[in-house]
Length: 503
Image 1 (tube, rainbow, N blue to C red):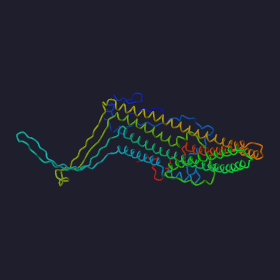
Image 2 (image 1 turned 45 degrees about the vertical axis):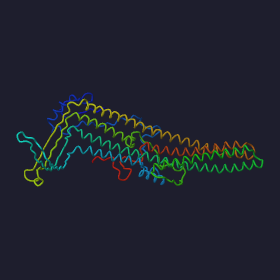
Image 3 (image 1 turned 135 degrees about the vertical axis):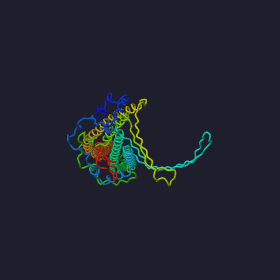
């Protein structure tokens, strides 16, 4: 991002040194500026915020240039299962992280309104009453006392004339912070949708893996009964019976581990949704639950407008620029106009009588002459924060590009792994059938059946895991692109709009 230099009013001598105001030269220039306040009204140092060039490649690897990003699709259209959509809607309504983010948005909007109010005159109605006794010592007269009684009612007004744009820039900084907070809430919501979707997919994975484990346990219990009977009648060995017992114990251990992971996942879903959840068995398996829409990533430049954390970082950069301008304006005179109009009397009955009117008008100009470097230090702080905001913006863009690239790589490679494991699974099923046939005909030991069934069980579990991981990679890609909540659409009823420009 190019450094932005301050600019003064037309005809005003330059008081700038390497992009920074010289506080030693400011007083003289400020006095000259105050001579013609009407001509200089509205002077500002506000620069145009320049978006830094994205420090990432122009295209995602393996993607067709120009394809529209899936981020344009709302989450209601991306996720098609009614049960999942109901869980997401409930999480958006009840999740405590969303509530915290919403409260922060309201707080930032209130701060914006506070800063904006300083641009306008402040009007107050004041009524006072005074009653007391005073004692004075007069030479030759001794001690004298007299009563004091006075009542007054007046309207008082105060206004800081924002010649140099300090208040306007403070308001702009507060507005940018508010919009950044709004985008941060959108980022929380996008992450929440992805977490709920991943938790739901994990539930589906555990559902299928538990069913496979129970089916395997039933098959191995039958095999153990056969092996025990063969051992009892003397046609089989004890080794074969213990091998069958080992095979059954392995399947039962796997089932217990799956039950444990399933309960942990349900607890995580309960935290996300805001209540304990009971998920009914899905009508389709993981192989049939993939979205029936394409998942193009689009161009990296679309991340700048779709991904909420990048938009929030850009608003933070705008706020940092505005704070620099406010710090520059602090080197110039502060002009305040205050006044009051009302009535005053020693008695309440005479408060509105003729001749009781009172008024005052007090314009003041405060010129910074010596402050031991406080204003220069404030400017240094504002510029350092701007530089930090630039670095954070660029880091956010790079992290977003990496998230998308990682999701694309995982999705592509997981598809290849699913094809490979699917073909391997067919071969393992045939191997298990042949091994059992050879054992039944007395041509091999039961150890061969043991190895074949163990490998088959592991491959069945792995295939289910890969299918879930591929679906999760689609969710990760969707979230990494900033999908779910278009920037111009609030994600919940009554949410404040990020595009508000008026108070």
